[in-house]
Image (tube, rainbow over all chains, first blue to last red):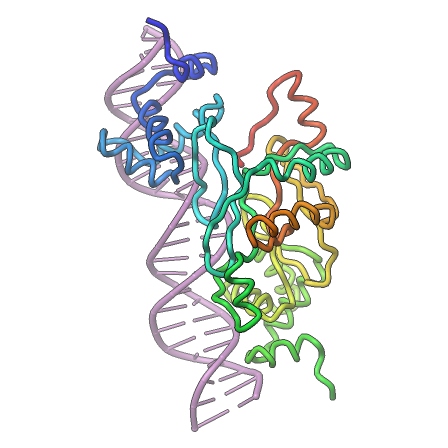
Length: 150
Length: 150
DNA sequence: GTATATGCAAAGGGTTTGCACGGTT
DNA sequence: AACCGTGCAAACCCTTTGCATATAC
């Protein structure tokens, strides 16, 4: 039988096909985005014996062969998602902690300019942008908002 | 005698003037940018007894009253700098780890657009952007570059 | 004198690593 | 059979916290 896409990718990268890697990939696809801990929880619904370090190692391999990516949203663990997912920029409010999103393509002119000036090719979705959401910037004109670390 | 600017700021914020806070602030200004560990080392050139947790607490207070800010550049500790410093965006290469910078104001049109669409006010210098520097994106057309975690 | 800051040590979250065992090829 | 991948436990980095003591006000 024909190998599935993900199997091909692993093979081509010189990696083996293992149940753990398959489960981690399926967890990423099912949850659409998740931290290593969250993915472990999902994986363990099927296979309780899987270890957190295996999830980390699997994610590293899956990312290496282009099946998943990760983004840094909050200050904690990164979130992983399947590569075919819709690309967006996360906007994290340093005041209330809320997370909003905008289409990544509105950054294109800016990123083109960065590349012209420096040659740097930016993966804008890799890290969330920080600042103040509408509510908190309005509130700020009245009184100091809450202040989580940034 | 007149209180220095930094003393005023602390007072106004309801904080006390302490040698530790002064030393941490001076370390930030001297190094121009540094991680908590690096700042501790600098502080300890003058006062060996100062503790790392005091540096963290001092930075938090100094940031609260607007004397310092921090930015997330690499994956490790954040770097602190004086508020009057030149504002720039850091560009971190996920392939070779190099860090470049561009003027923050080239992002203005983009950030205006983000605000129009979402109301979100972005502090673009707070987190470094990730991607590939000139060298590594050229090299990539020939062979796979090194791959530090992003 | 009283509230705040500090030092110390311990704990915390997230991640990586060494090693022996088990599974894939 | 050879090697890669896994589980486990320990270690790691960075940061926060509880508590007793010291210090700025």
